[in-house]
Picture 1 (cartoon, rainbow, N blue to C red):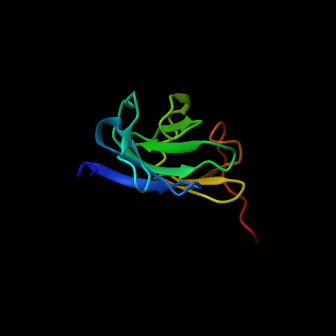
Picture 2: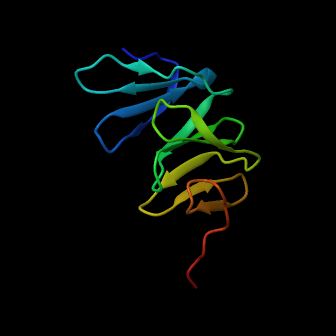
Picture 3: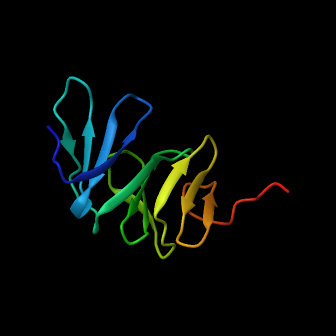
Length: 120
């Protein structure tokens, strides 16, 4: 059974679910197996996440940092801070984030962010 203080989850391509929550916890749940916890915790509450179209997962911290990990429970290999992203969604080639005042888009796994193009 997973902890009640988890705040959300990401459905992964292999059918498992990455759960995230308070105090930087990440848990991986696979049908028929007990949930497994990441060996390390991230430094803040985790409030959003998506599968990164470029590979791995992107997880949003409460303070707006975006954390990238190559595997769901693996170490964070990149942090994009200062962008104050509140929520993420992903498509086949891009990730879109919501900031307090605008949308922002990344096509390189969260390394860089820019305003999405809007059709006239």
